[in-house]
Image 1 (cartoon, rainbow, N blue to C red):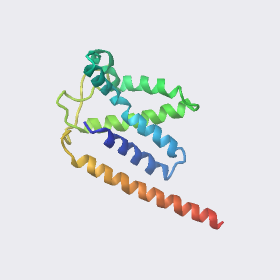
Image 2: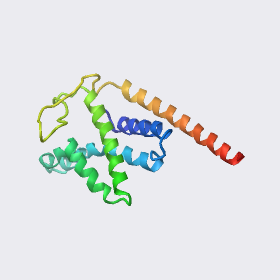
Image 3: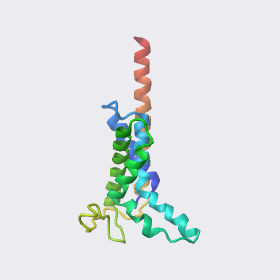
Image 4: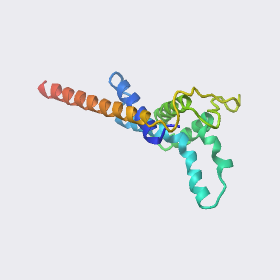
Length: 163
């Protein structure tokens, strides 16, 4: 599966590009989407439990399923003033996460997207987890997106100053 950097970069790219058109996709909401992009991988905290000698996988495996991520996103969004917006951006980020994971070849069989309704797992096998070209390309696009967005901000601030 893609690493956290790739998940965060894809959420950043998506929100920044959409933000060129819609104001709701501002910097703070982009950060929420980026946090949502790593939310399904909270399950990796089980590695810490395993290191400490505790078997916690049976308790936290559902976090890496869409239904578990929705529950976690709902709980975390309660800490924000605008709960609805926070929840929606967390879910947007999680959707980018699951989209990337769906594209990946997974030895365990894929993602159970419709759990608990349907236990079937899906994967599209477009690239493997060992493929280092995907993160490099995604990071290059993220840097390009950042540079374009900064240029747009400078241009709009100069126009505002001229008025």
